[in-house]
Image 1 (cartoon, rainbow over the protein chains, first blue to last red):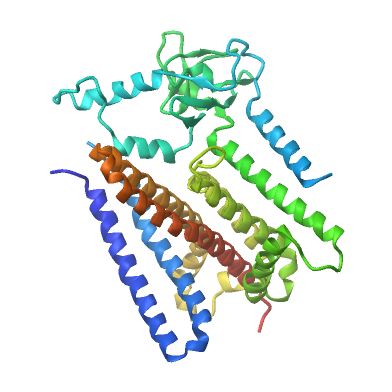
Image 2 (image 1 turned 180 degrees about the vertical axis):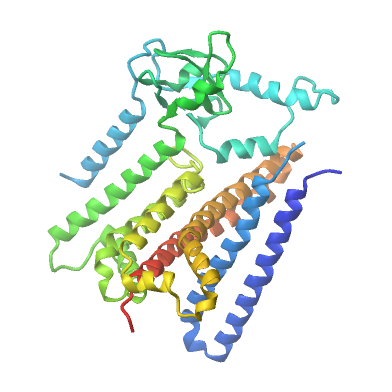
Length: 71
Length: 370
């Protein structure tokens, strides 16, 4: 078997980020579709939320890097 | 003094600083050391694991090793090919202060006989070597390493850039009182106004002016260091903000400023939160841990984002070496360009998020009672 289980862990963490940011992005799109004038405010809020979610996912990646046991 | 003249003086000083020779070492007389032992060294490391394969005298490309080398801090600044810039090693031993150039280690091949001890470079840590030629772990632990490493030198470069930009902008403001901004001013002013109006004022309230220097410093320091880390050639290309020690210190700064400026409502909310008394055994430890965990998240977020970005770019470039063909380079370079554009966004975004959350925590600390 090749690779390490740390890589699987990192991949799982990124699934979480993908789902989270996807949700935020989707709701932001709906919001902009409903009220195009508020587009820039919604976009700013979306970017901030995406960065925070990504921070959480990268916690997982950092732990994967730390726990990596190369053969 | 004209801008060109000023910039020339500043850059001459920078180059002079980076070529500083420290006295104990008069043998080497050039600032840049070309070393062919790098090739011998990497062949050493890889030949052990791939003993079963026939090597044909060529070393196999190890992406993990190369990537980690680029991400990590180092005592020499590798410029291109086999040329490296040796940086000063400054050690505080129990005997006294020891300063010498890292070129003496010749990429880890030789030991250096210092004034108080003999030193060896092992995996980029300077270790003390006892009289028997083996590393003395006890003594190594008592030696404090204050070297100017690659990250420290890169930080100096970023500081220089920040100083040049901001003193020039300040000077133009003094010269052009009442007139419309011109040149660098018109680039920096909207950004500073953005930090004040969109980050400081909404989160801190009317006491924002006291914290503006710290917020502006944090924002520009992180942003410029992120950007310099993306430039592949010297003086950029050092992974400064991806070094957890640096982000730790920045988060520590936020921790100290937030808690020193906490008014009595802030501490009241932490120590006697607005919940029924029987929830206190849960709430108070949670709130106390929260004091530490919020800056901790700041530290990890910045470190992980920047390091992850660098690792991705380096991995995509390593594709060319893994497949060992030049035909993959258009694909690889296209991916790398796309990732670098994303990294530009991330550089700004991470600086913005760090500053925003710092302002938010400060705002929570200085909030008046409703």
